Each structure stands twice: as C-alpha cells, then as structure tokens.
Length: 307
Image (tube, rainbow, N blue to C red; front, side):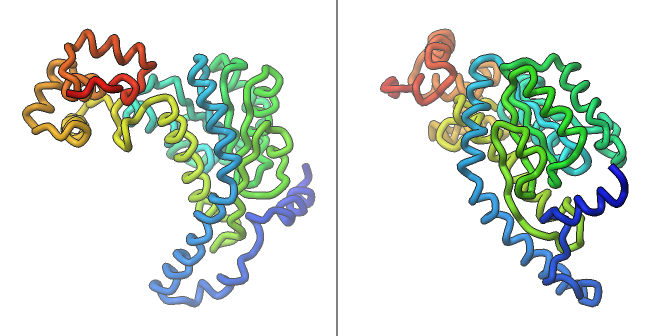
C-alpha cells in the first residue's frame, strides 16, 4: 500500500483520531497532565464492559481447547504483542500450567520485547510461519491482538489459523476492522482517541490488558484452577511463593501456619492436595485419587468429605 493509502486508512480509525479534550495538553502543568490522562483512562472499563458477551464466547472456546489438549496462542506486534507475551508468561507461575499451554508470539521475535522492531509487523507471511513453527492445530485458539485491526503480521496469522480450522479471535479497538472480518469472534472495546494521537499503548493498551486478563483468568477458573477465589494450583518456586502457598492453605482451611507447612511437606508443596487432606483427613494417595476423579476441581473432590 502507498503512503497516501496508509494515511487514508489511518484517517478512518477511531484509535488514530485527535482527542478534542486534550488539544492543549502541552500547555498544562504536570498535575493537570496527569489528571487529564486519568480522566481519559476512566472510559476504558466501561468500554470493556460492553464487549463482555464477546469475551465470554472466547473464554468458552478457550476452555474447550484446554479440555481437549489445545492451546491458547496470542499474537501481535509492538505493544499488543508485548501484552500478549506478558499474559502468557504469567500463566505458569499463577496457575501451575505447562509453559506451552498459553503461548505469546510477537512480530520480530523475542528481541522485540525489549527493542522496538516495528517494521516486523508488516510481514504477513511471518505471521503464518510462526504458527506453523509451533505446529498449530485445529484444537488451538489463536487471539490476534492489534489495536488498529490492520496489522499484516496478525492478519497473516489469523488467515492461516482459519485455514487449518483453529478457533480465531480478533482483539482490536476499532469498529469493523480487517481482523474482525477474519476471526470467528471479535472483541472490540472502543476507547476512542488517545491522549496523544496514535499512542495506542495508552487507553487501547489498557483495554487490551484488561481483556487478556479476563480471557486467561476466567478460562483457568473454568478448568478448576481456583478454589473459591484462591489460586490453588500455584507451584511455589521462591520464598514469596512458598509463603503464599502456606497462606492459601491457611485461608482455605483456617488451619495454623504450622499445620499448613506440615500439609505442604506431606504433599510435596501441592497446594490442592494440602487443602484436601487438611479439610478431610484423607491420606495423600486417597486425596490424589479423589482429585483426579474430580477432574482437578477441588470443590468437587471435597464434596461432603469435610471433617
């Protein structure tokens, strides 16, 4: 596309418009600049709220994927790609899942996480290539993340995912974008023009972060990774996480710190098992069998077994 063609295309995007409420922001003192940014940020939660039905559809597809051996794959460029990689990388320590269950892909590869490689987003073939490289299958869900909805890297990936039968989701901040026309499910929180025109790491990035948090958190809850509102599949690997694991056992069972530590020692720091044996008095092997029979859902495993 020619430069003039790109200019015309950007002119049509909500996210690239000039915000009439921030035209004089360069004249403001520091505190007023910050109030202006904060005021604009207030529109983000309500924009996300309006697309919760679309987010819910995506979550249900992700849950099905997880239950059938599929994966959740995020792909994007620039800020969008970094947010996807961030959300994916936080799933293993938070929910105790394998590192390849939620995958984040960014145009330009890992180096783009710390050094801008914005030209990489223009390669649609690379979007398809990286999905081939991870052996994408029809069981997987691919979420293409692009504020503009026109990033070639994301378009190439979504088109390839559709070809092989994977579920496709488009996350953009513009109405009727290119990727919304490709994907099975479109999530489009419309946050409007940014405080600084075109700096979509601001409201648009915040909206994307909220949606990505919802996608993984709700999906993990749906597959049994929580008990009440506690993260019971955390795998402790440092001092803070060992303390958090003990505290989770204490909160779930109302036991003492010493009792929690003893239960975790007996279960080799398996938080779910530690809670189950503490609440029911079951042996470790019996508790593990009960949890397996319950499909990993701690509430179901506990049932009416409490002492």
